[in-house]
Amino acid sequence: MYSYKPISVCADEILFDIKDNKITNVEFVGGCPGNAIGIASLLEGMEVEEAIKRLKGIKCGSKNTSCPDQFAKALEEIINR
Image 1: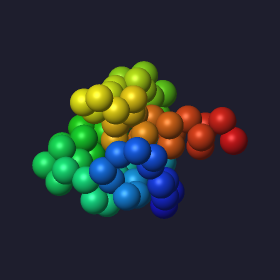
Image 2: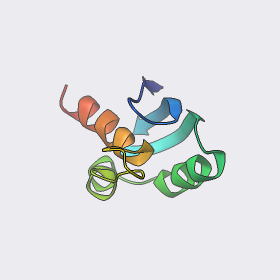
Image 3: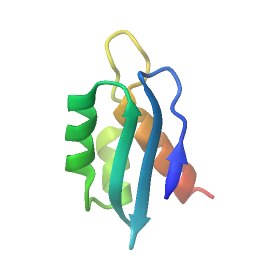
Image 4: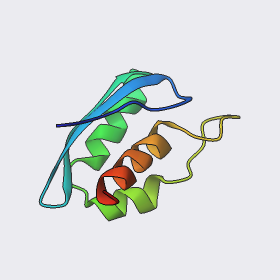
């Protein structure tokens, strides 16, 4: 299980697994529950690179980032290790 502490968003933590290059068990701790559950459901089984492609750069209101963008950053950190 991976844990990522997002910056400048409502969620306090993002928990997830990666198995065979596919995302599983996504959980956003804190933040907007409906959106977090929806994002987690859509990401289930998606390949890591595809998720990064779809989520990277999404902004939330006037913020320069969002929970989806922060998740993309978490994934990039893992694959760039």
